[in-house]
Length: 462
Ligand code: NAD
Ligand code: UGA
Image (cartoon, rainbow, N blue to C red):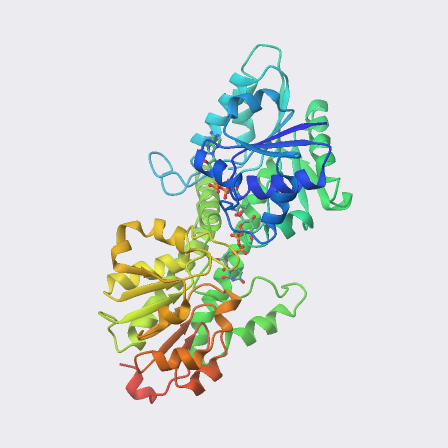
C-alpha cells in the first residue's frame, strides 16, 4: 500500500484523488485542506463543487480508501507521495502584481512538508506553476540536513471543469516530469505506476522537469488563443455578413486546424486561462522576451475586447440605453456543467450592464450561490432567480451567457409572451435557434452572425 496525500481539496484535488482512489484500491488516498467548511462539505451529502459523475465516485470510495481531513500535519507525516494542488492565483501586490503567480500558498506548503516529515517523500507539483518552480521547491525541501531526501516531480493537470471525471478516466495524455538523476527517475516511475493502473502506458509521457512545468502553461495559452482567434474573426463576421459558425466549420475541417475549441462566444472565463497566460507573459518579460510577452498578452486583451463588445452591442441595439430596463442573464457559470463562476464572462457582463443602470436578473441551474458571493458588493442591485421563465418575465432582453443545453430547450413562445416588447435576445454562446426565435417575434443578435431584427436597418442603427 502507498499512502498518497493531496494538499488542497479544490476543483483539482477532490476529483483527481477520487479517481485515483477508485482506480487504485490498494492505495490509501487522503485529501487535506485548511478550509474546514470545504472538508466538511466533502464529507457531507452536498459536495463543495458540482461536477458530473463526481458524487457517485466519492460515494463509492469515501472512507474505504478515500479520506478528507483538516489534519494537515499528521497526514503529511504519514504520506509517501504528496500531490500539492493548492491555488496559485495571480499576484495582486508587489513585484509582478497583476501577472506573476502568487506562490505564497505553495511555499508555505513546502515548508510545512519539511517540518512534518520523518521519512523521505516524493512531492508532486499538481498545481499550475511558473517554469522552474521545482528548483525553489527542492531547495526548501532539501535544506533540512536531517538525512531526508525529497524528490520533486511535475505532474500538471489537464482536466477541464464539467468533464473532470471523464478527462481523468480517459486522458489524452498524462505528463510526468522529473530530474534526470537516478533518484529523480525512480520518483518519476512511482508516479507513472499510479496512473498505469488505468491509463495506457503510451499515453503517459515523461519529460524533464522544466518541459513539464512549461507545457502546462503553454497548453492553456494555446487553447485560449484559439478562442481569442475565433472571437476576433467573429467581430469581422458581424461587419461583413459572413457567419462565424460556417467559417469555423470550414476551417475546422482542415485536419491541421481541427474542429474543436472554435466556438465563438462572449469570451472565455474560468480560473485558469487568464491567470496562466498572464503568468506566461510575466515569465517572458522576466527573461527579456518583450515581443513574445506582447504576443501572448494580446490573447487576454482580445478576450476583454470581446466581452466589452458584447455589452456595447446590447446597449446600441436597445436604442442606446438600457437604464431602468430589466435584462435577464441566462447563465452565471463560466461554462456549462459547472457551478464555478471564477472569471465568468457572465459576471463581467452583469457588472457592465449595472454600470449602464440596467435592472439585472440572473438565472443558472448550478451557479447562483457562487454568483451571489462573487457579486456581493452589488447584490442589492441583482435578482438571483433559479427559474428562467420567472427571470425572463417582464424583461426587455435576455442575454445567453453560459452554454447550458437546458437554455436551448425552453419554450421561447411562452417566454416571448411574458416579455416587454420589442423583445431582444443576445445569444453570447450561439446555442439557440435564431431563425425560430425571430419567427416568434424576437429581435435576435448572435456572436459573429448577421442579426435577425424586425426593424428596418435604418431605424435600428441609431
Ligand atoms: P481551488 O481554489 O478550487 O482549491 C485549492 C484549495 O487549496 C483550496 O481549497 C484551499 O483552501 C487549499 N489550500 C491553499 N493553501 C493550503 C495549504 N497550505 N494547506 C492545505 N490546503 C490549502 O483551486 P483549483 O481550481 O483546485 O486549482 C488548484 C491548482 O490546479 C491551481 O494551480 C490551478 O491553476 C490548477 N488547475 C486547475 C484546474 C481547474 O479546472 N480548476 C485544472 C488544471 C489545473
Ligand atoms: C481549461 C483547459 O481546457 C483544461 O485543459 C485545463 O486543465 C484547465 O483550463 C485549467 O488549467 O484550469 P476549463 O477552464 O475548466 O479548462 O474549461 P474549458 O472547457 O477550457 O473552457 C474555458 C472557457 O472557454 C469557458 O468559458 C468556455 O465557455 C470557453 N470556450 C471554450 C469558448 O468560449 N469556446 C470554445 O470553443 C471552448
